[in-house]
Every structure is written in C-alpha cells, then in structure tokens.
Length: 110
Length: 115
Image 1 (spheres, rainbow over the protein chains, first blue to last red):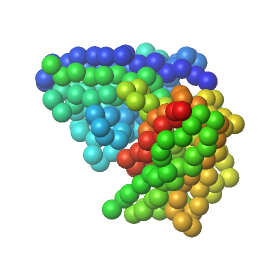
Image 2 (image 1 turned 180 degrees about the horizontal axis):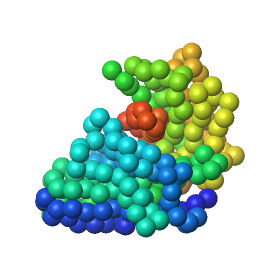
Image 3 (image 1 turned 90 degrees about the vertical axis):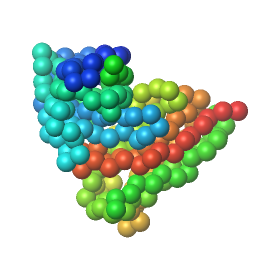
Image 4 (image 1 turned 45 degrees about the vertical axis):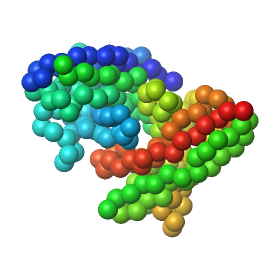
C-alpha cells in the first residue's frame, strides 16, 4: 500500500501565504490520483475543500487553491485567516481505487 | 437537510465483532459511492473501505482486509461496516462519507477495543 507524505506542521502569519504539499511513495502525484484536500478542526468531522486537484466546493473560501507542483499535489492558502488554523489532510486515489490519506499537516496561524 | 448518522459503536473485547451502520437522508444515497474513514484518538485520518453504488464492488485498506466487510442497503439508505477479529489498534472514531464531487460526512461513531 502506498504511503502519502505531508509536512507535519507549518506556521503562517495572518494575511500570509503558505503552501502545503502531498507526495506519494509510488512516484509523482498526477491528476490521475484525483487529489483531495480536507480540513479538520478540533472536535469536528473533516470537510473537503478541494477535489480532483483543484476543484472547489461552494463552501470553499476563495483563498484556498489546489494544484500540482513539482511532482506533488499542493494546497495554497493566500491571505491566511485565524479561522484557517486546523489540520489539513490530502487524500489520493490509486489504480485499484483504494484511497490513502497523508499523515496530515497541522497549520498554525500566528 | 443532508444527514449521515453513524451508530453501533461501543466497547468490545479484542477478537470480538461489531457492526456499524450509517443512515443517510436528504440526498440520493443510491447514486453515490460510500466510504468508511477512521481516526484513532489524537491521530490522523485513515481510509478504511469503499463500496460502489449498487454494492457490487468493494475495496479495503490492507490493515482491515479480510476482517472488515462493507455493505449497503439502497432501499433502507444505509451503509454498514461489519468488523470482525477486532484488535486494540482498531480503536477509533469511524466516519461514513461520500468523498467526491458531492461531499457529505457523518459525525462519527467511537469504537473502543479493550479488555
């Protein structure tokens, strides 16, 4: 089973920009992995922000964007707000249609 | 209003069995693949299993393959997870979810495996 890697923690200043990345042990992450990005705040169920690399839901703030960057999936937050402090998980799909989550990135807005 | 409500969690001894249910309402349950995701206390999300629309196709994470069985009843709008041969490391909150272009999650059911 593949291993999906994320930065364990990142810090961003209010109003700043930060990029979270998501790599795969099997090689480059491509659009064929249909990358998802999920946000989870303490005591809450997760909520997906981005699917299929870069597509947003109606509830996804415009300051979040998804892309592929240097063989990885990336989630960029531009103009961080205090309410963006949370755990962020990427989820990749593999050819056998299994999914694998990354270990998560704890984002601090400070 | 869309709802996914998990039930059936609780305390079970190692080696025991438990069946989780996820009751869906407010959307076309039979049109969506469904997933189970778990989260051990203080840990990250782990994908467990998924089932296709008619229920004929299932896939599992290596850690539960052969012990867990996912199923669905599209008449009752309910998703299930039968968990056998439970281990301490299966202790987690279990979420049901759609995970796709339509994104719905339940609030989770706690399963504790302990003697």
